[in-house]
Amino acid sequence: RRFMAARESLLALREGDMDFKYWRPFILFLAKTSPSDGAYVPQDGMIHLIQQLMKKGKGLAVVGGVVVGSFEEKNGFVEQATVKLQEAMDERGVEGFPAMVCASSRYEGYKTLALAAGTLGLLKPNTVMLGWPTDVTGSHAGSGSAEEYVSVVQHVALAKKTLLICKGGVEGFPCSDESLVGSAVDGANSGTVAAMAGYIDVWWIFDLFPSKGLMLLLPYLLQQHRTWKNCSTRLFAVAAPSTDLHQLKTLLTTFIAAGGIVAKVEVLSMEATEASRFTNSSSLQGKRQDSLANEITGLTSRAPSPEPHEAERASRDSETVVGGGLTALLGKHSGQSPLVIMTLPKKRADQTANAYLTSTQELVQPLQRCIFVQESGHEKIQFSPDI
Image 1 (cartoon, rainbow, N blue to C red):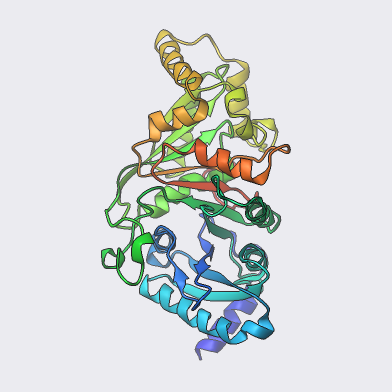
Image 2: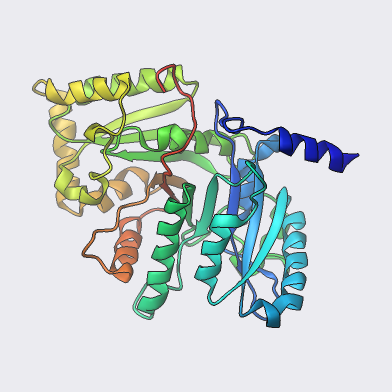
């Protein structure tokens, strides 16, 4: 009976049925597994983010792992690893399905998973979650593995899926169940036990409405879980000094409130040359054609001379920028925040993969935890009648 109900529901799905008014996470988590026994390898508590984002059944997950080698040689091991992955999900309360594939390398396997894992007709993951590559950055990293990692990032974009890259910092991400921290289940890399308090900071850097609002929706979803319920959302919008900062703050505050999101808005000024990797994707370059984009463009073109208090604030921020660019600005405003959500910086054409990953890691060095978001361009989120 359950099979028939599931079958009928899947067959009844039509194009557009998954376009919710408010985005729901259907996450493919690209996990690490042990090459010796196929068990899940904890990654700074990242797996708990899935459960925290999907409280009250609002979402679904596929946890995918890779067995390096040919399927002919490793088929028995794949079955064993799949069982262990399901056990790991059950122990952590993650609702969804395990998926294991064989590939020539872990990152090649990730590419296969990004294209096919969890796909059943129109029901397929809309988001890929990936850990920050601690094994491909730093002085001992090999350039080959860095190239493979960046290739996965590009592959997810081609697959038209949103990408969340999670960087846990020293303590890792908070665990949903304190009994798992430091236990035999999650070990030393299980993350932190403390319930979070303070601000979840969202940074819009020159692109003043990235991923159609998904970066504001992520804090909202997390705050429904007890781990993050004591946190508030704060939005930092970084704009060029030529922008009317006061009017931009008023516009964004009104717009976000109308969309049902409670967030404190701060607008900072910065020269585009200080964060060039964030300017190429700016929504002011014609990517959005709605009233919000038009109003923001107008603020730039008709910006008046700043009021004395605005000039003083801009001066303070400029002094920070000179001392270290965007990294200093992030550290000054978000260094004490338990989580920062920001757009994944673009890779310059002349950058090697290793240089790109190293520079991105240095960018967020002052932060406790960070989630980089690479938008797919296909996010379906309604914040106002114009979107």
